[in-house]
Length: 261
Image 1 (cartoon, rainbow, N blue to C red):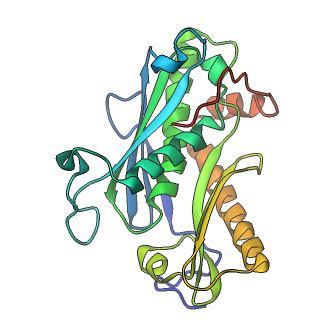
Image 2 (image 1 turned 135 degrees about the horizontal axis):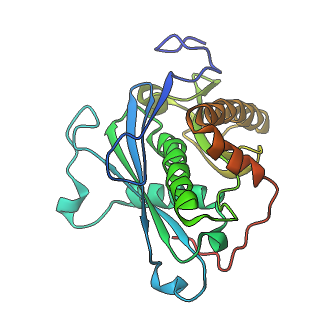
Image 3 (image 1 turned 90 degrees about the horizontal axis):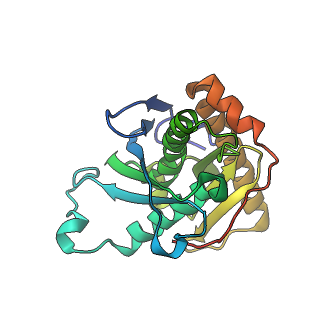
């Protein structure tokens, strides 16, 4: 299979995660996956949504947006239309669900962590890059809280990353660019934990349905891609923070109430 950028079917684009990218946020990164660049910031508020007040449970939520010239032609800012699009709302919920799957919301206490993902440049895979980078920003924010408040129980108990997979010209391929995604017969997004469990699988066929064998191949590609991304997360995060997360593996979270936002 020949890809536009010369990569092998099982090869990720070059990925960089730059920590402490902004000055004020409790956690912030710039993630670059090829020509897709996303700034992810994590902000902590000492309050929760009304439906969680008095429960002792915290909340992780996300917002996602694209700059007007993140793509080849200008896109109108959604704020000027007075509402977010269905696509944006769906991506925000996906990011929030994905990050919450690794957090003990009961141990977090009644506080909210906002993870804002702003796409500076888009070339496919913006939602998966947002999840992968958003996790690092979240980990840094919770790490600072843990030190400041001397937590005995660290609420983050696993790693989270995501990657796109697809079928292009009849062949499964990892980490699609926009050019590949626009021509793909199948588009699949895979979100997984560091312990190898699936958080979410989003897959759609365009035209020809895909086989079970193709699905297996795509999931295997996605698993390998996520494993590489989590390894990168562990390399760029402080060693003590990585140790804190690893020390919590296998612990069952204290979920007071499960709500999809």
